[in-house]
Length: 273
Ligand code: NAP
Image (cartoon, rainbow, N blue to C red; front, top):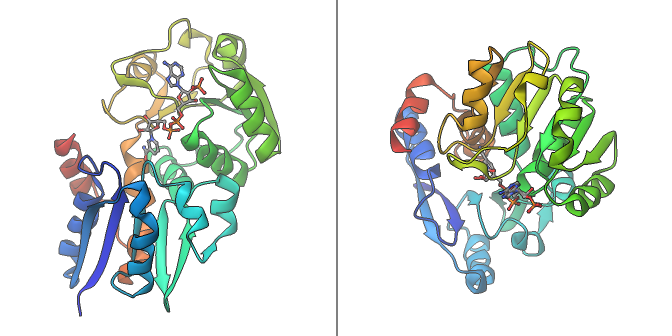
């Protein structure tokens, strides 16, 4: 019987997940399918009934459902609970379990793109305090890295730091130049960088040589932040690998094979941007 998986969102046409999982299904010769399904918020409970009926092995959850599915899952693991969002569902014996693989995607991307990046790292400068920042900070804390969290809206960063606990220093984006020399890693988790937008006033000359700069925005692949960092001779890792690496654990759970993030798959994805 064909094993079926999905990604649900609203809208969903933009999703690149079918390309990723479809490529792996093909490469491994698995009798499986992975489809994008548009599910409106009001239709989520009915979709979960379908899941419990055994039609799918599981799937991914994207905007705007990552928080709403919490209440509908039969179990949510501790990691997803801490991050406050579910992006992966696994159906077993009529029960739906929710987890979050964004943090593994973030770590897998840096491990592949900048091996040894966490060794001796004194602090990470995280720009942004939205949903993606939560997964990034939990990931950094899993490697015992102190975080300097800067956000346009200070109150949002204060709330996030309070919820997550641990070693997090909070400020606004105006503090970026002061904080820059104290961090060996810079992570942009804000929407800045999409459509060529840039951080006004953040002087990358303030960063130490050898600092690693990464952006989770991947449209464009090289954001203005990454372009400037590269021009200054700093190490950079783009955000496309995070999307690829977050997909690995889900595929393994549904189809029973651990897939590899290959250069060929990355090229296919780049061509689709
Ligand atoms: P979100 O929850 O809406 O958070 C958006 C963040 O961006 C907030 O911190 C917000 O600050 C900040 N922001 C928005 N516009 C800004 C501006 N003009 N100047 C300064 N800060 C601004 O969104 P999200 O889910 O965290 O996603 C953020 C980005 O990450 C998106 O571009 C998304 O596509 C990308 N992403 C990539 C991956 C991947 O796999 N590579 C995974 C997840 C997300 P305020 O609090 O002040 O509004």
